[in-house]
Length: 287
Image (cartoon, rainbow, N blue to C red; front, side):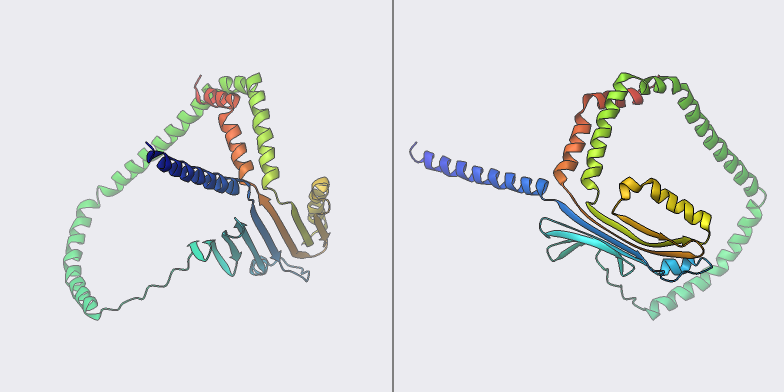
């Protein structure tokens, strides 16, 4: 009994250390944010009378990068320099590796053998093809038309059945959407969606440049849309209009942080909410 107690103490202390390490790692994963950064540019410094979409595409450039756990995990993508999305853990590239080009081995002997065999087989194949074409030329068009017609009929029947099912359940679904249970569930879900959008949205972003659509009316509509969103884009967007010519000279940049704990909390809240589950079950149920 005396010898067992020290062993149990050692096992207990090891388990406590393991639990402490797991808890610490879990807290780090949940509360260390994922930092991301984005920047894009459309270089078109001089206005021009005719639209040149090819030139605009050629002058497009941008990048997106992220880092997590103090740079332990990082990655990103760059256009047009490096369009493959890469993820790195320390010094190791997990995804987006540049695959080495496979060297093509030329085997002249095999090619000669294949050529000789193909030349021999073509003679026999030509005769067989001529016979098969003469036998099937009378029946193949009819069979093809029948199969095509049958596929079209089956697809139309499936679309008709789906539309009929939707109309049959319209009254039932409208009743659910007008119920108090749906209003309560929608309010809860919308609250969590807004919470998620705020957590994911960049805390610093800006759009600057000059935009011209070649026509005062079209350019005015673009500026009008910007004006409608003025409370949201205040101190973030600075667009100068070019009314008489075409121009697309824009620079955009953004950076933010995503807390994994917030994403998990929103997902768990929506998943385990009783009202939301009830509405989903009712919508899945047919009238």
